[in-house]
Length: 213
Ligand SMILES: [Zn+2]
Image 1: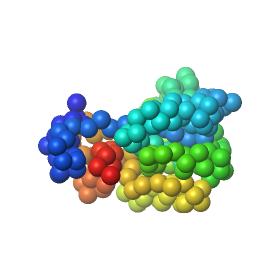
Image 2: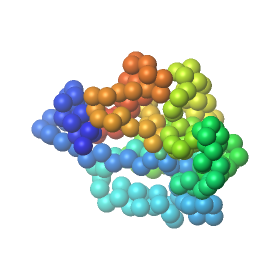
Image 3: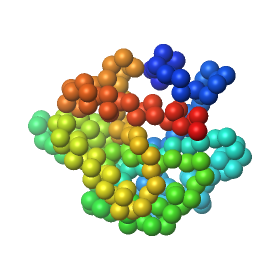
């Protein structure tokens, strides 16, 4: 399990005194879609999935949670729905394999009640999880692939601006949608740049640092 090998060998003293391990609790793909849409991804607030998190926080006073929030979620399905188009060479790499909602539809700054709910959750950090979590081609949820470093930067800047416009309190850190290094020693960025790779892979290991607060 690559996460444990990473934290045990490179924890750099982030564990509180006397502690040898930590349980990291984070939730990905949080966005304003509710059960009135395709699925509840947080939009039902305490009445839905986030209510479970709320109750866990209530029962465990030492628990801290990181919610990775997608600023402008667009995937309407989590599995491919396109059929014959995905068999056509070249085209298959250029189309989205599942339908998308229009850009801006689930942009978090359009959902003040959702933002207020997240801001009010105790011991909860929010951090960006991509911009829209979608990409053309078979790896349809791996948002960062093939783009150049500057193209990735543009996406991240837009994500940051949406969080700012929404007034969503958030921390430094980032989880790239559906993107994982194959093991801890292998850090590849979408464009193969090693320095960028560190920026992309590191945030996956950010959460445990917060435990010591
Ligand atoms: Zn995700």
